[in-house]
Amino acid sequence: MSIGLQFYSIKCYNDALKYFLRSEHIKAGISASNLYHIGDCLKRNGQIDESIEYFKKAITVPVRNRFDYKGYSESRKMLASVGYTEEELNRISPKKV
Image 1 (cartoon, rainbow, N blue to C red):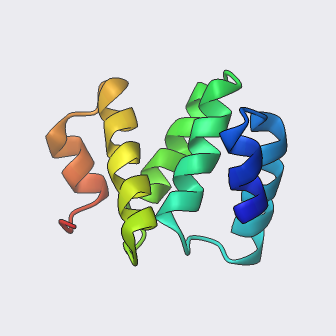
Image 2 (cartoon, rainbow, N blue to C red; image 1 turned 45 degrees about the vertical axis):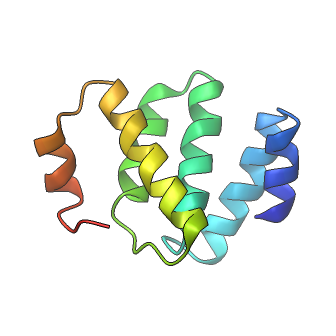
């Protein structure tokens, strides 16, 4: 994931996406932060529907550290920005962080 973050930080979203997806393939659903970054890269590449699916996944995995918390929080914000209500978000992710 760290190589992905390097590409992400310099706005090379296609390259970053490859590394984030590789990380997800190795350990699926382990990091809300990684899932958020996949969703954000997809969104920035115009793949809105696919990005929404990753944002949804990001709010369902356990938050283990501050990076995951940020991924969780940002994913909720992204979903809210496309019209998900607080009630819908709570149904997707019933546990409060």
